[in-house]
Image (cartoon, rainbow, N blue to C red; front, top):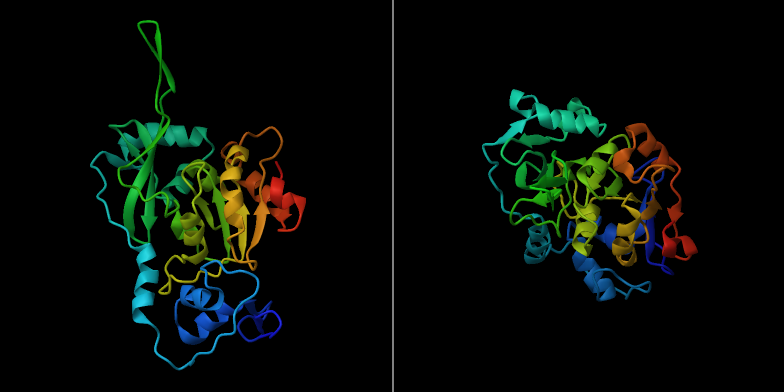
Length: 302
């Protein structure tokens, strides 16, 4: 650990690049205490400024259990029951939903992996929101035309809507994709599914992205016992251009150890949902890195 910066590097943890970063992550690994505890002690804030305080403590002391409980509560959500009219895509009643997805370039075998369903009552594709094995809600996407005429009067149909009490400001859709050090944040579920080849692909379920959602992405690890630290090192931002302004101020709150990349759709494509899986992968591979002290960080490629 370097005295001048408070940063550390471990050459034993990973042969390729080593485990490295800010002091709170090393202290968390050494003690088992929540990283939030050390951020507060070092910086006086959860996010942390550039100059940490001198910190003295006993590595062998027992963790503060109450603090650990508060940290884990961020992942406590109420489980909901799925309605009877949500059919698996392999069911004969889901044929219209399968046709809609295939029309959007999503094969049924891929959609089944994401546990997508079809509602005969709502006439909509159903995108589930799971946190581990727990279903906490879902989002509907109608398969019908968005504009209908009744007696020569034009009506607009709702395109997307969610189930009641969805904690959308605290979670992302397809959280089980967060299994490595890369996260790919996209706006809608179809866009997110198109990021399948990149990995770590999740949906914000709207243009607004909250600080709690970014915190969820940074800390959540699918199928891991310790949910306090995910080890996300690369964050790809694939939001639509009109949604990027929502997340830009929040990027400053990320640790400087997280590399952020801006993924734009190729020319002629409105968003990633219109792309093929291979096109999205190519866009991610060529995405420019957003540096905090560059103009690119401010305009995010728009």
